[in-house]
Amino acid sequence: MADLTTKLGSLTLQSPIMPASGTFTDELAQVFDLGLIGAHVTKTITAETRGGNPTPRVCEVAGGMLNSIGIPSKGVDYFVDHVIPIYRQWDAPLVVSISAGTADDFARLCARVSQPGVAAIEVNISCPNIEEDGKAFAMRPETTIRAMEALRAASDLPLWAKLSPNTGQTVEVAQAAEAAGADALVVANTLLAMAIDVDSRKPRLGNLMGGLSGPSLKPITLRMAYQAARSVSIPVIGCGGISTLQDVLEYLIAGAAAVQVGTASFREPAIMPRLIEELAAWMDAQGIASLPELIGSVRDDEASDAMIYAEAAP
Image 1 (tube, helix red, strand yellow):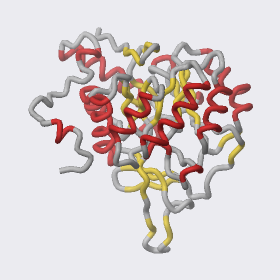
Image 2 (cartoon, rainbow, N blue to C red):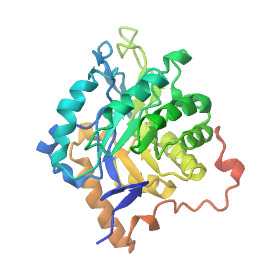
Image 3 (cartoon, one colour):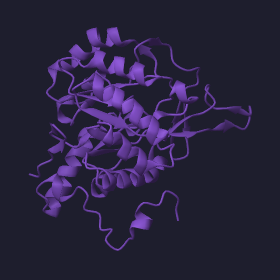
């Protein structure tokens, strides 16, 4: 049977498939064996208690979903005392996702969640930076560096930087995150978007705008994952619009060492173990013994560097 293990820096995952932050909970143990997936990625937490954004917080759109949840949180102390211990019953690495409004607050929260039982920290630098008029840290290389340097100094655990599709500098931001100490990149978060109810003429989200996820996002985040994988030496984790084996394969061939499944889990809670089973069967049928034979195997030799790194197409 094909070997599905994949290495993300110092971590070895038994499978390249894991959940995206915000779409996973230990309650899914009632649906499937959580020991089957590559890692457990928690919902993003903040240091302080937060109530979240006004409702409605989600709505369906063609080919995807919009959400503006606002990261409701019971605070870091509750998380450390009550949530981290739950995951000690599984061998899969626990990845804690964090968010903060300033680099210093990010660093303090990173240090606080660097607890026994936590294998890595996913830093959501695609969240708003209140010191830069609300623009996400990961929109620019210079703000990415400041945040990642502060985070790197705060913890010895592996740091996964979650990038934003709301940037025109994908390569520069990816390289900045690596230079400042990121151990892996998660590519990418949701894309800022909007929908309007034509009957009421009101925005369909209580927060006016939100993040687009689902199949309609995949061509964008797949392109970003490809660009990032060619630009850095640290592992890339693909994220965005994954709902089929074809999607998983595209990200791996583009250069991602692992993938995160998000919105599709709302429609099919047991999708991750299904995709793991399908990936193993496909590799067996293709005579592929291990993932390194597949990762980054895209045949792009005939494309010029100018086309590969173009931010605007065509």
